[in-house]
Length: 104
Image (cartoon, rainbow, N blue to C red; front, side):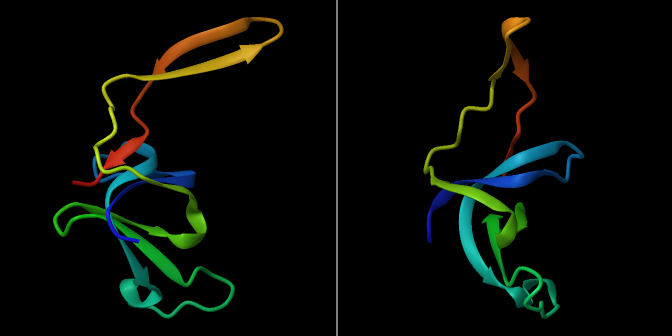
């Protein structure tokens, strides 16, 4: 798996800026469990994904990855649209903060 990917995670994580993210985008490298200096056992993940370059990256445990989408171009993060729908209130559209950590 080489190239740039948009990796979505099962749960939110915090970036170095203190914001919460639900995905990371950048160059991807698959790492072994020794990347953090510990040996994992069968009850935990045994591989990790490093997203980004040597200066700016995030390491995601393999068990937390929901989707991996090949995406060579940086996603548009200028305005994220979201919505809610209910029988009582109908459709509501609104803007949300960017949930993608750009690791580049």
